[in-house]
Image (cartoon, rainbow, N blue to C red; front, side, top):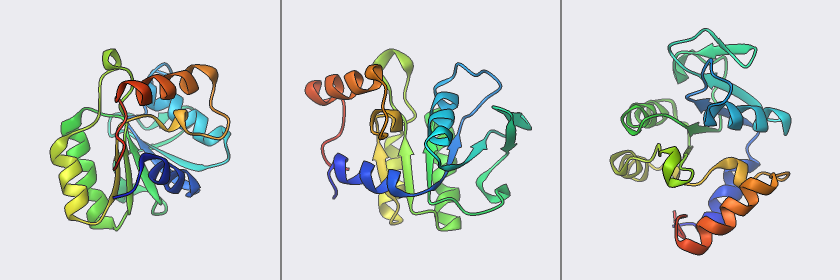
Length: 159
């Protein structure tokens, strides 16, 4: 098992990422993550079967519809949707998944079933936290959230 630091460093070293859960509502966590990764120079694909566009970009219904295979997927959906997405990752050979979990009041995409499925199928999985907490230009709020969650045990030590 990798440490959280090792896993996040590996995930963010990839340059092509899909974000599941991007929506028409620009205030959603998935949209914030999508914009941050795009601003940091990543090739980012938006996933949502319910809208053709998000953030001014095409939005794809599933991973199979993407114009190229991403190196990783950030899941910012309900846990049961995440379970479907990790199965698709295994089918397509996508080796990395990050299941978003913010502060407790913001909900979680983490599913113990999806985490187990990833591990059983050789997918590197980060079950919690937010990519914005680890990006090279993290804002003060996300840096503070990372510190607080790390201090209180809200982030996994080993992934």
